[in-house]
Length: 76
Image 1: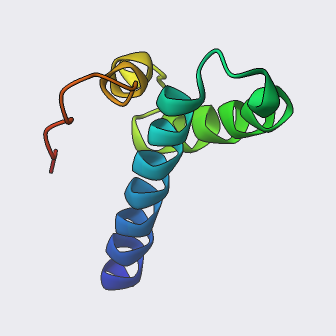
Image 2: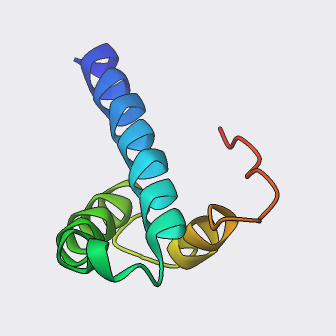
């Protein structure tokens, strides 16, 4: 059971990373406005699930993924 949960959490973290990158790179682009709203809601909920109900730190990850930002460091 623990191995399955660890695997699910690993995949959740990958989704968080992917969606944070999308949010960072699509900021200010009107053509993504509708999708951004949906992704932002799902991303926030998944991030909170992985961080004990807190969204603290999420915006920092999104900001690290904005165009022109240095690459985000991998976190474990």
